Each structure stands twice: as C-alpha cells, then as structure tokens.
Amino acid sequence: MNDILPPESARWEWLEDKVRQLMARYAYRNMRTPIVEPTPLFVRGLGEVTDIVEKEMYSFVDQLNGERLTLRPEATAGVVRAVVEHNMLYEGGKRLYYMGAMFRHEKPQRGRYRQFHQVGAEALGFGGPEVDAELILLANALWRDIGLRNVRLELNSLGQPEERKAHRAALIAYFEQNADQLDEEARRRLHANPLRILDTKNPAMQALVNAAPRLIDFLGAESLAHFDAVKSILDANGVAWTVNPRLVRGMDYYNLTVFEFITEQLGSQGTICGGGRYDYLIEQIGGKPAPAVGWALGVERVLELLKEQAGEIPALVPDAYAIIPGTAALPVAVTTIERLRGLGISVQMHAAPAAGGGMGSMKSQFKKADASGARYALIFGEDELARGMVVVKSLRDGAGGAQTEHPLDAVSQWASTLQSNS
Ligand code: ATP
Ligand code: MG
Image 1: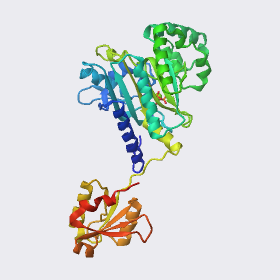
Image 2: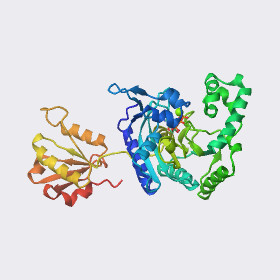
Image 3: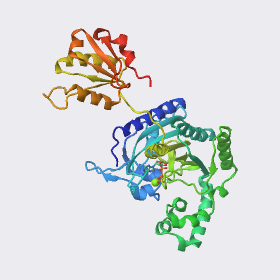
C-alpha cells in the first residue's frame, strides 16, 4: 500500500480531472459506494472459485456484531448492490462512473499493489452492442485525452450461460485428457470452474491452455451477431482490435463481450483496463433482471505507462509567492493575499518556520519563492506598505526581474497581471 505524495499526487489530480471532463462528455455520472461491503456480496458476485475470492480478499469479522465484511477488491459488485438498493433503474438505464481505492492481497510488485486505485465506468439497463462499443470508445478517448500511446485492444465473447455449458463439458474432457499437465490449482478448479483455468498466470500451462477448446467456437448466431455489431461500430470509429479467444477475465460475472486494453511497456502487469458485459449480475445480487456492461482501469498502471512514455503533465505551481519581510506586515499582507485568492489567483504565503523567530531573511524568502515555481513574488516591504503599495517582481527573468508597484486598496485592478499565462 502506497502513500501518494506531492509532487506525484499532482499527476493523480491531473488524471482525475481528465476523467471527470471525459465522463461529462459521455454523460456518465459519478457514483461513490462504501470501501467496505458484506463479504457474501463479493463471493456471490465475483464467484467462489476465482483468484480474488479464493486468495486476495481482505476480510474480517466486525467485532461489534459478528458481520463478515471485506475491503472491496473491485467496485462493480458494490455499484450493482447500490443500484438495486436504491432502485436506480426504475425509469431506465443508468450510466455511472467511479474512482477509488481497491484492496487485494497480492504479491506486491511493479504495477501490482495491495491498495490500488481504479477508475470504472458502468452502463446498467442497456442490452445492445452499442453500449459495449460506447464503453470501449470511452476508454479509448481517455487514452487520447491523456496522450497515452501503444495500447492495444483485445476482444472476446464469452457467449451466454447455455453456450458456456457445452464449452465447459468440452473443456473438462480436454483437461482430463491432459491431467498430468495441470498444476495443483487447475486440478482443484477442473470441475468447480474450468473456465478459470484459462485465466491461469502459470507460464508452464500456457501451451496447454492455448490448445484448449475455444469458447468462441461454441457461440450461437445471436451471440456472434452481438459480437459482430460491437466490432463494426469499433471499425467505423477507427478503433483497432484483435480477438483473443483466451481472454476470459478474472470474475465469473461476465458474458458476451469482454475486452482488455494491453501494453507491452509494463512487463507482465500489462493490462491497464479490463471489462465486459455482465447481464446476469444484477439479478444475482437480488435486483430485477437487467443487462449491464462496464470496465475498470488501474490508475497506477496508467500513470506508470504515461511516465514510461515521458508523457508531459503540467506541474502545479502557484501564480505568486508572498514575501513578508516583517511580522508587522502580516495583517495587511494576509488580507491582500486573501483578496487575490478570492479573485482566483493562487498565492503561496511565506510562513515562519518556528514561532517567535521572525519571518526569516529576504534571501531565504526569495529562495523559497524560487523553489515554489511561482512566476511572481509579491513583496510586502515596510516602505511600500507605508505608501499603500505592494511590489510585484517577476521571478522568471533572472536577478533583474521586472518590478512594478500596485495599490493595496485596488487589488481587483491588477490581480490579473499575476495570472500565469503558461
Ligand atoms: P491482473 O490480471 O493483472 O491481475 P485483473 O484481471 O485481476 O488484473 P481487474 O480485476 O480486471 O484486473 O481490474 C482492472 C484493472 O485494475 C487491471 O487491468 C489493472 O490495471 C488494475 N489492477 C488490478 N489489480 C491490481 C493491483 N493489484 N495493483 C494495481 N492495479 C491493479
Ligand atoms: Mg488479478
């Protein structure tokens, strides 16, 4: 679990702003659900025989009432619970998004943490392929907005439960024939959830898994038509994709379209975003049956990839740094700074490092002003204050930076000269 500190946190805020703007353009509305949910929600929702439920959940018993609780390992189950609880689909579909921390007890490594963050988008109450495509276009637009390159899109269709049944039988037969090549986990999952074996991360089993019966070959006309419709909308919009018949995703709730956005630039943690359709989850969680589709992206992986690609993120700097030579100037200085802030100018105020020790030398204050990155210094010097004036000095053109005086009683007339035009 990581602390996210400045200046790194500025990159997070920048990404969050981009997400908010993007979601507004696609008319997806923000949703915030609790970090903690009842354990059975995830067991039922994600599936008992999944990596997350079997080995990655932080679960505990509430000491006060004995309830079993879990730190959310993902947010779709919680969103669906909330949608059902608040009857949000009573007048039609809803498009929602969230951002927040998720928790999985994994082996920490680059791009894999125990507390990590996701941005997710969900469209509930819509059954057509146009919404699958919209969500993919939405993710794609985010990559464009933040300048992310070299991300490829893999698609698959998991069909419907009936089609899965036939495939499941073929899969079990195939794995039984090759039982000597199965690892312990796969052997255990063989009859409980053979599809999960396809999602194995064990390199020794990749060849076996690659030659397994493909679910896509078991799909009927309706499922294939849905898949084709998604692809043609993507084609029409110039979004490149490949079909990966091995793509099954980590949770049991998916059906029909599933997809992942993948990069080769982050080693084995290359999936930055994954999602798909989950038409049966709402009913599973106790709601009136309704279709749904969504995705989640890993914020750490996206930011890491951006860094890898030297993506430029504007640094956060104040417009001005207020230099206050003596404590006597504080009342007037702070009042002026407050007026400027009220007018939208960002001002970092010089503050004494210790009580009673004075404000510090001009030299040390200028040093701090330079380090802040501010374009201007506001200097609340004694002589100028006596004349009702404050000095504005440019910090960007060397020691002889241009210097002007402005009246303290007419802040609104000169405030805009401090606004960074960068
Ligand atoms: P992986 O196969 O890498 O374990 P996953 O299939 O478990 O990923 P999802 O549950 O689909 O991941 O979550 C969506 C996204 O969240 C992932 O594509 C990834 O970017 C991010 N993510 C998942 N687990 C972690 C983690 N432990 N640390 C950081 N990011 C994660
Ligand atoms: Mg995982």
